[in-house]
Image 1: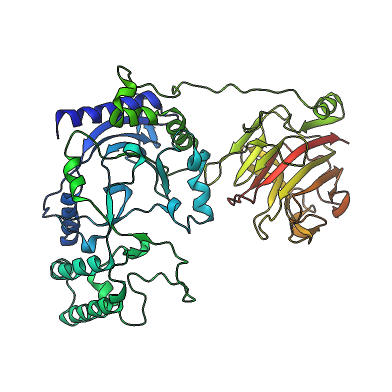
Image 2: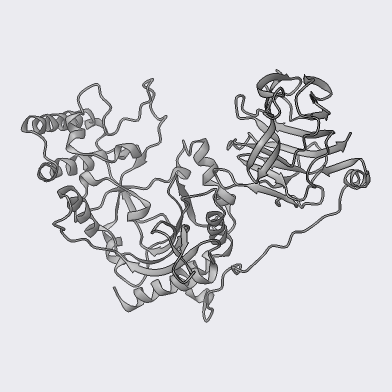
Length: 564
């Protein structure tokens, strides 16, 4: 490695430190180069064989920040890492190994074959859960990275790749013929590393010959396979008898082709390997992990990189230096930046209700700017790390808070609620909301500590389909004193379906002494004469849902609690 390449790695560290400051964690930073492994007597033959493939990788150098999330205090009372677990942010020149899945069976110290698991560019794309994660905080179309190749590897990491003039990565797709030619070449090598019996070795050779004949007419077709098929061994060929799925099969259980996501097998162009040895990176990879995406420290890392890191400066530094001549790196936003909440005028309904002494609480989100987190509300992040924002709905007045795959709670509501009250809220779902998706839950609880409820009422609701009624679930837990409501029931939600542009209903919950009533658009859905102890006081309120689907959001507004 040249002094200039080492210097670039050091710059990567500086750029990271200027763009990100860990919150709730400890962080450190370092730079590194490719580790080229040698034979290790303590490693297995298989481990050594696969490790030698690193000799075929392009020259790589980079930097990382490591964020330790588990901490303890040392003898001096200073916070130190409790263990070695952490999340990472990397910037690397010519990185390949850690953004790809190796096809080890045909790889060697001379040639590295791999798959790039970029679901975003595949026609089948991500599944529903992964799609939600792939757009965490707008990653899929974020303005700061939209000009660069970027994708999410499920349950692994977010990746941004920068190339000169946004050119395609310098990789070649191999054809089926090359795959079988290389596989046949490697048979004796793998028999030394992971030997099978002489009988099975002969069977593997026979099956290889059968596959070559089977794919003879597709010899020049691009070799594509599912990610689950990349871990090929000699046993794979032993098992590749007629009638079984083979390496290139992508049929589903019904025999239909193309329903599974497959990726081409790639290798690095030979000229590129030589160019990677020069002081000019051939591509740059900015990547970061999200091992705990519903935790604030991880969301902070993700948000900091997307909004603070100056991707364009990095591009210009390496590929168009005249644009930034005599300019040092500056983040787009400094880590100390704090967004000031912009408050808009309250609606007339909000002013009127908040002036009414009988109205205990009212919220129509009119003071929050569209696109921002509801002022005065807290979001407990969901599986994709998303949180509620305010939106307008075409054809409906007012502001609406989105609830999808997270929990939202009012942070500024007085506590406890009145002993007797009428509580109502409006709910909207879009047309073609997925039938069978999860409910929107509204929960009233008496908590002894945050998140720990000794008693509660949980009302779930979701729309029907094609004009059919929706459904309501009601779960209650009032164990003390005995004799009150404990258990769950289901009811019909009349008129709540998914066939209109905006499917809107009003849910009303009334508590009067021991009685509990639930109404949907003024139609009584449930009534319990002895449901809740008369003197019971709720002190927590929340809405939650766990739907990651883009069309399966709930919209809430006009939340009102009136003292009875």
